[in-house]
Structure formats: structure tokens, C-alpha cells
Length: 299
Image (cartoon, rainbow, N blue to C red):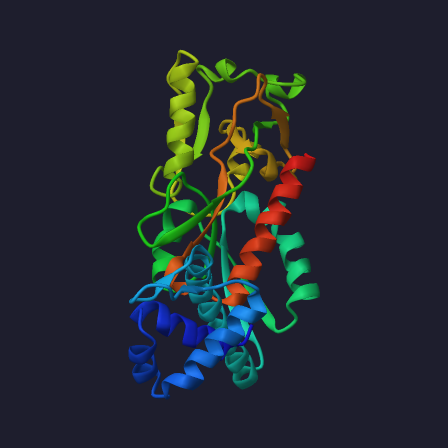
């Protein structure tokens, strides 16, 4: 479909008058009517009901009006992106990731970008869940891969498959001798977590799980900075529940054991700001969702 004909169609549909649409488009009415007829012939359907004094959209016309606005917006976004690339030589996209996603998904994402978006430079930033929304709002990162149940207003969220929780334990801990650990066995154990302001959904999930299992989690260390919790586990200061993706990390003095029966981690999700959408960002979001879904289901 010709972009110009779609613009003509939208004008007629919004004005509900060929004469007013022609004035808006600053063309005469006969060429406008001809272009609409050509569009209807291309699609093989009537877009306007002309049997009444005032024209009306047909059911096909209603669908096309909705979709054509989307198509024109995408067309403009493509043009803008191509212009940016031609001037700058490449497009920069910044991706914020929590630690587990940085370990478990970042290599595959980088590989996909290299093979499919050679003019995109992908910048990775490790940012805890609690800070990512502010950074997206401030345009410091374009896409967030974090653990949060609902987006703030103006954000889009795409949820990813659930992951089971595992437990990181010191190699000399009694749990290291077990093939798995029950969540209720954490009662009385020293537990290391990120402070709630860094990972609120994850913190609340673990507290809620402990209450459902009939005990209060004994949190002995709340970490207030980014990075991994594993050095403290290796030092024997406690144990820490982690998502399955995080078990890709390795550190001397630490082993991972599955929590059985399964208890799920707070799900990962991809977040973007609606106003920041463009062709490159949307394509990368789709790829991240595919990569993460395939990775998590394979585990």
C-alpha cells in the first residue's frame, strides 16, 4: 500500500467528508476520490459506505483506520532511525540488566545484535531492579530487564517465563551435602539479600514465601550496593536464594542447590518507556523476549 494513499484515507475517515479532507490535504476533490478508489481496488473491499448522505466507514474501513495509523507511525519511525544512522553511523541502545540476566542472557543478546543489527551499538549496564525505572525515565537506559510485577504509567511490560529459585551455599555448609534444599529448611539460617530498595519485588517475594512456609526469614545481611552476593556466601556469612539464571555464576567456595519443591523467583520482565519506542528498540525487545524464553524453557 502506498503511504500517500493511507494518508489520504485517514484524512477522509477523520473528516467524514471528501470535500473537507481535500481542503485539509490542500488538493482538489476528484484526485482524492480517485486515490481512495485505487486503494479500495488494491484491497478488494469498500472502505466507505457512500449510500447515505454522509459517508460512513465500513467494517473494513474501521480496521484499516486503526492499522493505518500504526503503519504510518512505524513508517515515520523507520525514516527517523535511518536518518539517525546515516548521520551518526550507528545507533546506540542502552540495556539495563539485573545481575542474573547479565550472566544468563547477555552473551546471547550481544551475539544476536552483532549478527542482526550491525549498525546498533548495544551498551550493557548492570542496574538493580529498584533503580531501573528512574534510569529509563531519564533516558539513561532504553530497555530494562528486571524483576518487577507491574510497570509505572507510561511503561510497557513484557513478562518472561517463571524461573525456579536455587540456593547459593558455602561449600562447607551442611546444605552442600544435600542434592536439594526445602524452602522451610531456611528457618533459622543466616540469609543474605539485597536491601529492599535495590530489589523490592524480589525481597517481598522471599519474605512472603517464608511466611507461607510458616517462619520468618532471618536476614543477617542486607547488601546496599550492586554486584553479586556470592563473595559473602563464599566467606561463610550465610546463604542466599537466587534465580536459576544466576547459577551461571561460578565462585570458589560456593555451590548451588535447587530448592524443592519448586519455589519461583520473581519473574523477569522487559520494560520500555512507551514514548521511547522506535524500530531498533522494538526489534531488540522482541529478540530479548525470544532469547530469554528459549533459554528459560531449556533449563
